[in-house]
Amino acid sequence: MSHSESLFASCTPGLESALFEECVELGFEAKAVTGGVELAGPAGLHARANLWLRTASRVLLRVAVVQRDRELERVSLVPFFGRDAAVRLHVSGEEGTREAQAALQRRLRLVAAGKGDEDGRTSTGSVRTEGNEPFDLFLRGEKGRLTLSVDTSGELLHFRGYRQEVGKAPLRETLAAGVLRLAGWTPGTPLWDVMCGSGTFLIEAAEWAQGLAPGRNRRFAFERFASHDAPAFASLPRTRPAAPASPFLGSDLNAGALGVARRNARRAGVLDALTLERLDATKLAPRPNVAPGLVLANLPYGRRVAEKSELAGLYRAVGRALCRATPGWRFAFLLEEGALLLGLPIETDASVANGGLHCHVVSGHLPKTG
Image (cartoon, rainbow, N blue to C red):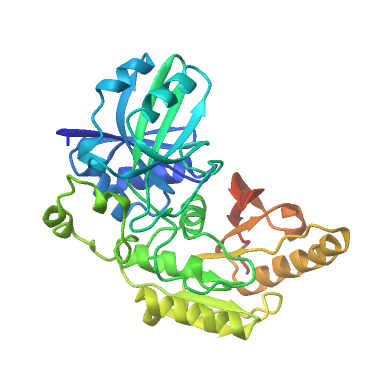
């Protein structure tokens, strides 16, 4: 491998600022761009990025940036794939990519060729082969240049390993971590998820506060690279200093969802940090022994007229309940539309993608009483 690395960490659209903030906290040299963050650093940076980035979807290692497709002939992929590995190629852009794809096909044993972005969201031909999964190679043509990148992550990074059960409206771990940052939550601050479902917000926050690497319990594609330095990777720390302890409250009307949240939290190793209760989000009571913090929820969405009518009443009731139960707290909600129905003083409104939907993260301060 080279003595320095250039990476692209992709993320859910709308989380670029959250990912950049996280990279800076981790001490990475970073630049926010559309769709993610560019990183530069010493050899092995890709391993640290995969292990520690909580809001990234995938980490790509730039192998080459060239002007013409024939220049790709001089790019060696042996340090990554060896000499006879199956490779899955993802192609995007229009400038010279067809010729470049043909050049790569002459050199590699391709099991699939598709078109897609660097997160693989629109790639085609995803297949499984006997033995190890194929490696993923990304070719992008843009502004007269061809960029060739190797996927170092494998499965998308929201697969942490703890969430083996999901609730009715599952929220990706990476999006939950990003919403926490967009809402301005920081470790050491009380957190209350009033519709906690399978507990993703709470688990991500508790792991972050306890200094636990999000990728500590999974494997990555780079561990199969021919030049992978296993001892160096094993020596990387999986924990960081923990923040001061603070309450992590979770409530939900669905008892089954609370059971899922408990089991997920136990697998993540943070169950002892959580307080889970069966409560109706429209009938909340104050927590007199808990300092003001952040109250949040992934609110249900409605696709039909009847559903939207029902949700309007729910949103109003939740807003009133929060004013009674959490005066002086900050609030944050992930929702598709209808934020004004909450009747709360919205200060920020960030657009994010959630499962193909255009959604919003709205936040602000609840009025103090007295």
